Image (cartoon, rainbow over all chains, first blue to last red; front, side, top):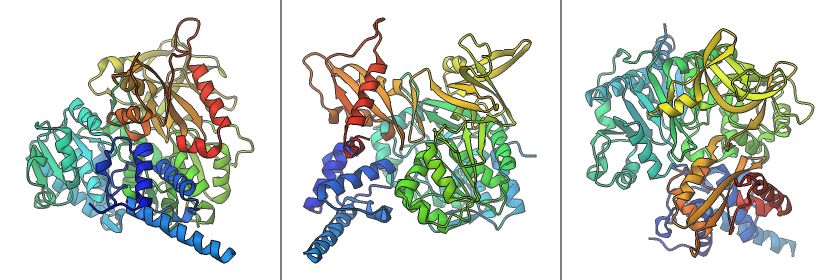
Length: 95
Length: 539
């Protein structure tokens, strides 16, 4: 199995603890599809967004709330990393 | 003359053969093709021994093939039993055994889950895979039938085996005694509702209907069959997109859909997080909502965004299809909840007291419904059916068979009915009906749980949040995660309590019963005191 990044591991731990409940840790790989069987509903997606925003101190705008950004741990991790990079650039510009 | 749901398709296919029936994931199918394909599927079912009166389960994501299968099942004279894709294996197994399905329609990536669900046994005789050939190995258990085998069947017309009083489908809903119960609806029940809906809302073949509800949710009955009866085009939301109100709203706007029918929870999210205000809603002529109370402040916003649109609140438990409705003709001036309206033309409603006597106008009573849309009963539960479906003397000398919704209502001065609440422990969350007793029953099965109470905490976005209060057995330790895992193994996700609290004892009333009101008050007070983000995390 591909190694998880730190971001992916943090998100995975949140999903397993708060939303997916019965998934075993070994079940959830970075590329596993999260949306195909309806395990995450719209409220679950918003909880994930809120968790990422608070944990990584980023803002995820509503127009980023698209299936392709939440279809796997890797996709969510990439969304977070992109927002972190944007925030970093903005921070440097502000300085 | 149409007596059965699949005859709707057959007749529409004659009139509008080349008109698109469904558009999904970039694929479409015309009415003519849907008719032919469902003929093939019906033949495949018959070849594998499915007969009139059987049940065939569906356990698959939304797809054009799923709709082909639904029509094929009904043409073969069987009832379809749609199962929530996100339901745990134990629930799936319970439903298939409870109504003794003769067949299952699914997809290949569910094959492993089937192995886990039915280890070492073959409870289902035939399993159809809609996405290609049948997987080899133990996954297929019974006879595995690939889609290429179905495609080899002749596609010419087939006599519909069903009769109007046969079951068209069975929808499983939460049951207060710990297991889900199957609501049995006949072709006549569904057709009565569909005819009413097409006529009342003037659905035509120029309409483009949204379909957000999954097929195990009764809102889909309108989408599929009112759409087909009118020869309209239906646009099902793919399963992977169902949790993204922003993406759905954008797609519906771009597809210029004319009719939306969904739950207030979804519409609220479209307004608050879906960017609805920036979308072109000029094609939307009719917006129907059902399943729960719509917070008026959001309805008002929606009506301002789509001033040309007709808005209506449809009311009815799964057992009655839709039985009352209210057209919201002008933007509500205050936050008084929108009424559930007046009975549909094919229903009668009665507000009765505990002795089954009509209450005076303006007084609160339980809502009973009679008419052609009312269910046949609960599958395999004559006792439960008898408790809710009764012969009632509604006026001196007039006895009707009516269904007790359990909803408390009051008739307003203007004749519209107002939903007041419930006397029992049934709540709505995300538009789904949940019996708190079913969750409590699952909690009591946990070895470390001594007592458990589940409460619905009112929530503006999703109707209710679920909170469980648990008293562990003496000298036993158990945590939130273990309890949630235990629930998730038996219940759909929306029924797993998000808030779990442990106590050494429960508050009691003077008569010794658990004081649910005090407990609920504690949670409501808690949520008011918590920071919004903390509440959100618990949702």
